Length: 292
Image (spheres, helix red, strand yellow):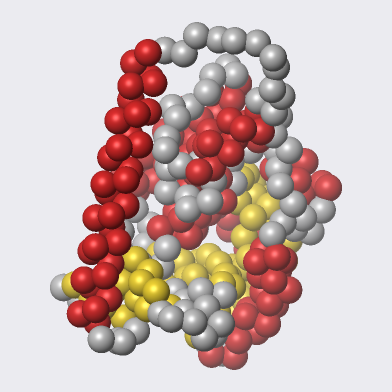
């Protein structure tokens, strides 16, 4: 791994820690930095965390939540998935460990790699490991952005690999480095860090995560009155009316598409998997939208 770290240092990344994931030192190191799991929220591409929620965490206004059971399972299964990958690719050398790198572009840009792989010609690339209880027929965008961020921080621009055990199936995905997109992520991260430094809220979006952040940031109810912006209230009324209409439209379209699938698990449009059928505990199938 010493050789790998020297190579990364030449490419633009610096090793700054070997703290185990989830440890106090690990959390402290991440507190004021932008890591791989942060870039999707910053780009409003995370299904769980909004830019506003992340900003509140980085600003010290919200305590980061404890790891979910899904995250804990991922940590437990990661070594087994890594071994499976190695068994399937015996020609590759795998370097795994608790390594944190910072970018020489900006020391606040961090990467916690699951592993680095070396091919027979000595080329290095990033290996990311995921575990999910849900099927993963296509690579989720927030995972792709996470790996692209690691490529930015470390300078390892060779095609990266994400391997996953998802929904009981093994999947491998390749992530290509894109310089134009990388520059967009860098600019977005720099803007976000400036918002944190200046204590300026990001633009609110319509996510559940942003609403949860607002609720937590203002937990007390005081026996007082306040004047609400009339235009904002009109906008809320209009949104509620539209919500009722569009919820009905979504259910209509789901009903039509699921009926047309006639029980087929996957639905495709122009070769892209866009919907799939799932069920919970043997219940009736429901339609999950997988397309962008």
